[in-house]
Length: 430
Image (tube, rainbow, N blue to C red):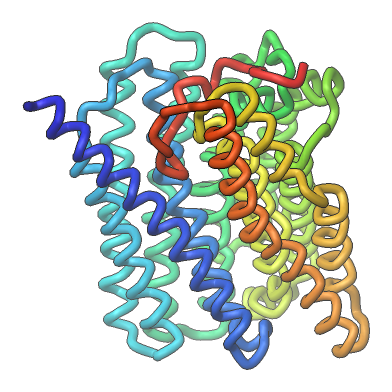
């Protein structure tokens, strides 16, 4: 009886994962299709994707990878669902409250986000305390530190909702960007890719990956806190030092990417999209360095950072999600090797064309060109990115058909149900 109850609880959690992830992405697509213009709706779009879809994915998958790395058994359901629901509720309040100039609604949303993230961090800490010995146990420190960053970034955002001077707005925008992107999302992604990158490339992991990750983390944390701290105290030189520390950490961490990439290359859309996302993250960091160097005052920061979120959303976040899901969906579908190959092939439909159009469109859009050209390339980029949705539906149809052909009797799993094989390395196509 207890097992059945636990199974139903996990089923509800999986459905909540599916619904929330899809809801945020569909809401972002609706804003693009129904809004007056992408530029006019940019704040809403950025937060639907980064605070909505991306943060939801960070919450879900960092817990899954933490459990995998600590070799702990899933025993809860309702508490995970509560954390997801609380984060989603906070996101809704913020996305509605800020454009409507309702600061107290934004404050309530920020408190929901902060509570959910701190709760998540406490859960990760408990998992680490209960963990069995393992090679990558310390990678979970990335997730633990990441959970401390979003509350700080959300606090900076909530303060801005109440109105501040131009100088403080610039300082808080930089703080908000650093804690949320470099901290909450950046630390989670770098921690996850220690094991996930060789998995999607289908290559052997670098022998010293865990060492590289452990060496990089102190520099990354010091860089984030110093960079944001410099903005808060109003000393740009301190922020520049923080940026340099962060880049040192990123350089140490990036060594674990090269061995798998050299061994296998980018053979399908999953690693290609993730690699493109990392390149755009690098461009965003380069842009941030230019902002720190060029800004004559903190009041210049909002204007100078205007396009950085577009780079991080269109170039980094969406491509990272597409790349990750393009690998995960075939693995989670079940049905055997034939079904796996069929779904993977379907998801790779037009892969090269889609990746090229998405990235070239964004690159052109960032150039100082005519507005009409910007609109045209933006439409192309949106279409090529949004094409993932119908291709995803098509791949599911292909998978169901292939399952019937092979006579599989497995129940169709949840779209984002974690796979126990996720960290076991290459499973096919070698």
